[in-house]
Length: 326
Image (cartoon, rainbow, N blue to C red; front, side, top):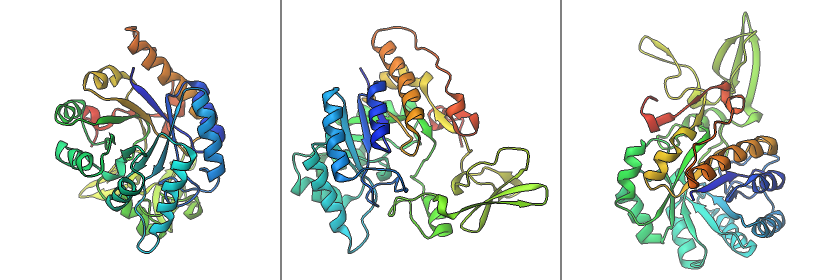
């Protein structure tokens, strides 16, 4: 059976994911060592230890994301969190920074290492390098690959692959996080903060509602229409004579119909995005995908759960998997 890896932004969400059928959950500490560093999210050391024990009782794994890039002179925090994760008994850590991978391999050799999507390893040479240099056991693939490309990669590597199937369509591999850093002064890749709510403002401007981030207008929509959250890479830009969502549409990824193809391509694990989401959201999405993975394992037709209302803008896309996405 393909492993279902599910988000847990809080201890309550972690319990909800496990109870809904997650094979594994991923979470982070309450600081800048993980890429979802928002107020009210994440775990203290004590909470993580208790969560690991609870998850293991129900047969679920716990993975900890230490997937930001340590700031010069502050590496000690990331080193401490590696030790904390190992002490808590986690099943793996998810890392992106080469220096941190080297430190983990040298100082915590028994702690299983997964390569974060933040590392953007999208070809066999890159993946094999991480496997040979740091004994990485699994790579989380960036959301820029087709199913056929994933199959080709899996033929040339000996490590597990994990592919995103639902949630935010965040590519991360092309430097667009720099846009958010420029607007807010906080880096998604280093501080773990993308389009922080503290920098978001909605303002009525004539007939429109303007959504702003760090003082920059990201969207203008008629007042009677829903205004999207101002994430810069999903903002409206002008390129030549075209004005629109040049980089990325404000919709969610939903690749449920591609689960059989991903299995045939050799994918080990399916990942759901959404550590900033509520426990009710997590439970509903996990139940739907667990039903799909069970059906696949048993040779049954995949059930069609209705998840559109849980997607961004109530719309979804197959993203780069189908190459209909930009």
